[in-house]
Amino acid sequence: MENKPKINVGGLRKRWLLNTASVVFALGIVCVLAVTASFATYYYSNMESDLKKRAKTTTDFFADYIDQTYNEFYQSCITYAKTFEDKDSLELQFINVEGDLVASSFGEWAGQSPRTPEIQEAVEVRDSRAYVGKDPDTGEQIMAVSCPMIYSNGEVIGVLRYVTSTRLVDVQIFLVAVTSAFVLMVVMVVVIISSNYYLRSIMNPVAQITEKAKRIANGSYGVQIQTPYRDEIGELADTINEMSNKIAQNEKMQSEFISQLSHELRTPLTVINGWSETLLADENLDADTQQGLKIISSEAKRLTEMVMELLDFTRIQDGRMTLSVEVADIRGAFEDTVYMYGSRLAQDGIRLCYEDNDEDIPEIPCDTKRLRQVFLNILDNAAKHGGEGKRIDASIHYEDDAVVVRIRDYGPGIPEDEIPLVKRKFYKGSSKARGSGIGLAVCDEIVDMHGGSLTLENAPGGGTLVTISLPAGH
Image (tube, rainbow, N blue to C red; front, side, top):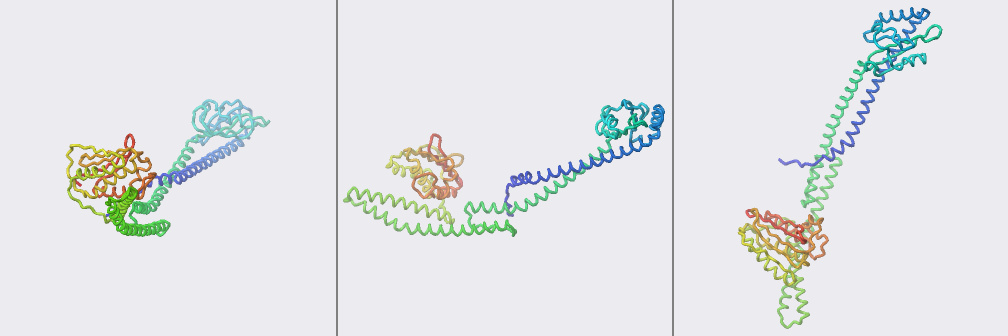
């Protein structure tokens, strides 16, 4: 069963939560607060209105007693307070103008005289005033309404005060807030679940497109993306498919052109090499002519090597490169290459230092011809790019069930930002040395076909270190 491609959507999910869910949540909080505040205002305003209406009705009732003496009037207040029917939910108080409690439905001397500010305000403005907050004496949340009682001569002789606890109202408001918050949480869960489903419906095809696009970027030209969607995602997939086909066609045309051109170049180059060597064998040539023929021969050989690299490259591109594997002495093949190339380097004033050792390096299954090609190419690169150091070190060792070859030059090294790119085809970077830019790509492919690895890094103290690791039992 084919594994579905995976894609990291953490970034998209985070952005969605910040940009969408946070906005929805903030709006929801505002709605919860608004609903709670509305219910609180509604409940409290109704309570205040009801208490004021009661106070007004009661003071109107007591207006009939205003013509009595003060003592008779206060006695009427005490009697009325004792017979107050709603004493279970309300406290009725009569307070004189000095603020002293005269009578209460909870008893004649139910407690200390109340100290809330609306009492004095009602006396001063000669109208009803309300108070909502903590009782200064008990700390309980209360609502109190005070209504002035005016004597027949226009004098305010006291205050009628209704007091009730807001605990039940506060519980109702709290329940409204909790219910609103619960509804908000349900809405958020629905929004998140539906959005995750929507994200998956987008990210799954995007993951497939991303996986195929990576394969195309890595050289699998012609790969097609299969998607059932006929929307913008489908259009994107169709565009990438068309691009993949065109790249595949262009790559095929390029490979065919390079292969055909390389084959065509081999014949004249062989003739040039042959005739230059034949002419150089003539001892009657003057010095200038001999020098010119040597240059022709050298450049023809260099061009032949480039043509061979191009041929190898087209074989790799077409999947036609194969290995003739047999168990062989890899140390012998490497040493032969070093000694053979060392004489060439000596002509350019470069010393090739081979680190001889007595290690037991086993024979390994490999294609010695192809590996010699790799060793020669690495040595040639070391001479071209690090030749100014006038020294190249070469060694071979057996480490951790692998044969490890190291070649180091003492040149300027490779810029750090170019190290990950140097093995790409046709990449030359900032180097001014001549070459096609495909030698390392071919070498990397050959080593990879052996199951090994080829790495490049800047050596301590300067220069470039190339390490080739070949498994002994691959």
